[in-house]
Image (cartoon, rainbow, N blue to C red; front, side, top):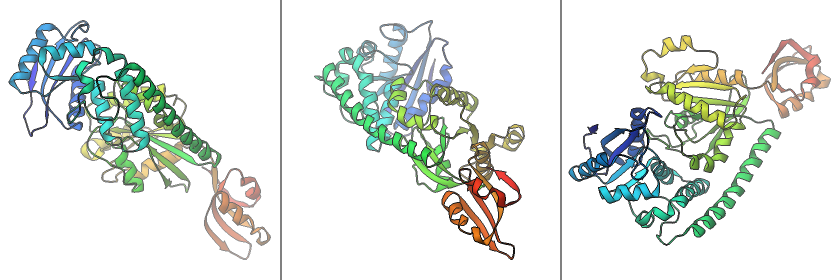
Length: 424
């Protein structure tokens, strides 16, 4: 089948193709590939799909369909052919020999997007490592692909680009980059340990790419994180502290978005970033309620979280963009305590979400009312140092205090509590 799209403006004109072996939903995957192409500033022009029991070893797709693709490339002035699977270097060379058009695969496209969006030194290191690991086994058959520079999808980013680059040089580069990244990871790990030691509560914001994670973080904390209607708009980890309804403070940590069939090169390269979820006290799983593939993408995220070792960590599922769904109110009635409908754009449901996060966090402190004798006024300083005082009133009987008290020091004031205790 071939599907023609309207041309809007001059960009890299892209023909997307897939081999349907029945292993996954090809149409849904091509929809996602189309969004990836747009994110890479390409223009999706044509889709070509062929049903086959398996990939052709030489050209991935059948020879007859490949000739058809070559004709379509000439007729529609295609600049890029992108396959919705991983190609070998030999397959890329054979396809280009027939079509005469620069050819890349899904992984190369995602790596290209990551290269364009990586802003920090750590992000660039991670992308370059992933690019080099992807190129290394394909070096012998890549031909001119390794020497192509300049604009266009599949050519951006750091890394070795000269044809003369051999495996020894790439391995040396990977080793140097990995060592540099390891130093950054050690600093990140020390920060995690320091947060744990200081009793800092953390909540990792995870979810499928473009679900609205950065928009949510901005709505809650005014963090100023880039949020666009594009896949992988942000790659860097951002953390901001926020006060919960129960008075506790939690540090929100934004993470890189997930995607179905995420290349293992990227999972490995961004492992230190993704580990923020595995080390968090609670996970905020953001899903796009307006997406027709919401349920499938939610399942992809859950599987990836499990692979990252996040089993056992409490999860609050946040269905975002409810303002785009007319039946959101009815869905909210059917959800459990750990599922909330919100709109990060309008702010609807954010209070319920924060309450759900507070309820999911482990009990670390106690909020209660105290009546301290005047000769125990010094305990107020201890409470302030390890918790928070909401109010204090000097009465004839003593000092009436409403406070959030860390469990480490609660035993010091337990005998002075009045009107019961709330454990938070």
